[in-house]
Length: 105
Image (tube, rainbow, N blue to C red; front, side, top):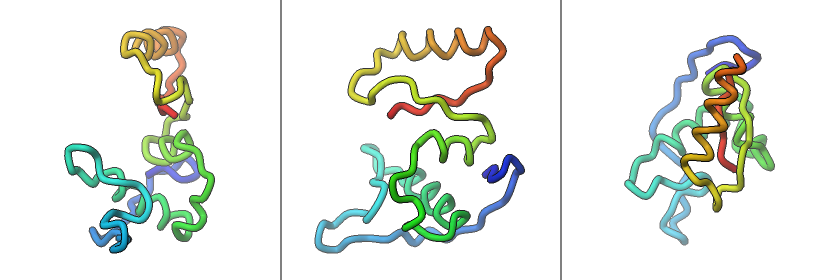
């Protein structure tokens, strides 16, 4: 992770907050394929920021920046993302010399 722009190692365990009444993770959910890398990254992000409560109302572009060290850019609403449009936009940014990591929000 890159808090304040510097690479930092964040050590976490694989125990995630779980809501037994809903039979699901409390915060970020597992992916459709069952992978839990998203909730684990969220846990590392929460740890570096103090706790999960500090993540309330956060933006995906912030966490992308923390994770990659590159600035985040929100492009399109998540329910309307034609793949060719997304890649065309990213290609235009790259050819202009702008290094962004896109977050679909």
